[in-house]
Image 1 (cartoon, one colour):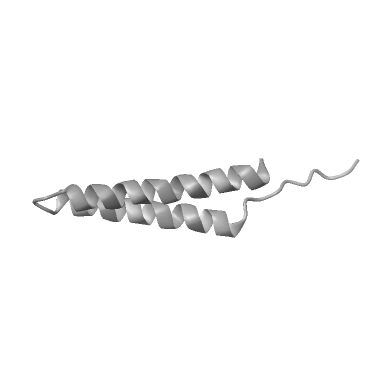
Image 2: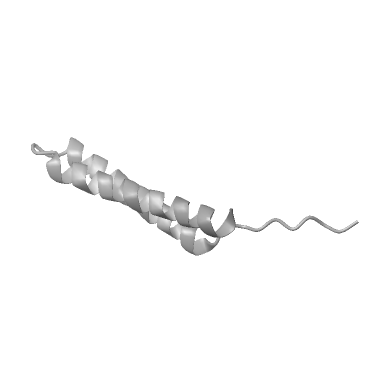
Length: 63
């Protein structure tokens, strides 16, 4: 019986997801700590987009 080989998601995609999560957290802090939360909302949306890009890339390349 052959051992089952499981492919791990590449570190580059995990790195993208981590960077996106950190950017999103910074956006939330900016929204809470500011009188005008618009800039924080933009940073939050950018972080979510980077995270989603990392998730999509990992799915696209690894299935």
